[in-house]
Amino acid sequence: MSKLSKETLIQLLKILRRDQRTIDGFWFLQVEEAYGLNKAVEIDASVWSKIGKINALRLQKAFDLGQGIRALIKAIGLDPLWLFFGYEVEQISMSEAVMRFTDCLAQKGRLKMGIGILECF
Image (tube, rainbow, N blue to C red; front, top):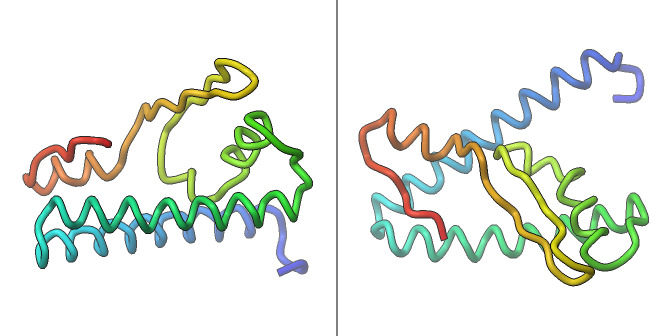
């Protein structure tokens, strides 16, 4: 990969982002179809909380981000998984931040398929 141009790497990252988003969406829809919406949301929340912790540790190790809320905000900005969403992060205090989702492709997809809005949790 080190021999690839910056433009090629950016294009590959965009493709990977779309692939991950597609896999996540189809995975959720299959679980929802098989077990119902509530179970799908429960499983999805469990999976994403585990992924979040793993990625935070990986990013901390790779980029020495420090500790605390500022480090968490930096990690979110670097985490490729957050490329799924439009979001804003506001630091409230030294121990608190608020994350607001401003664009959700999953919701847009659900509306496009006619299956309704998924209440965010």
